[in-house]
Image 1: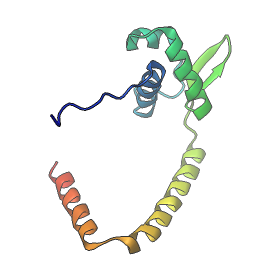
Image 2: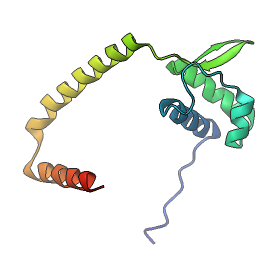
Image 3: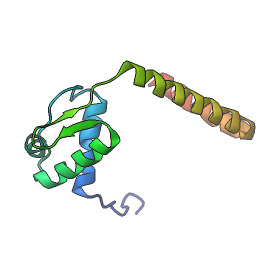
Image 4: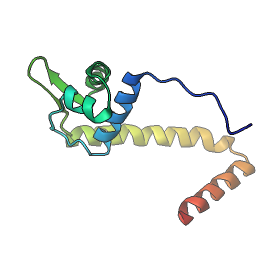
Length: 122
């Protein structure tokens, strides 16, 4: 029975975090939008506690900003910060490429070509 595998256990706060994070990153919750734990808890079918915990994590990561007893909102996108992050990501990709390419085997390249062909067909 290969189709039956053990289920992964995830906490509700982690599920709330992933769902809210994905909505922010996808733009479903726009920058500057005020978010309320009660509203999102209702939409997610959860109590407010896991949503509050997700909010705390998102604040720590910079996706939300919060002023206690006032508001919690999605952080505004700052163009200069996006440019800076893109430069860092570009440098990291370059480094990874320089390190990885010499270690590739012919089979690895064929696997990537096949993946690219499947991607193009999709």
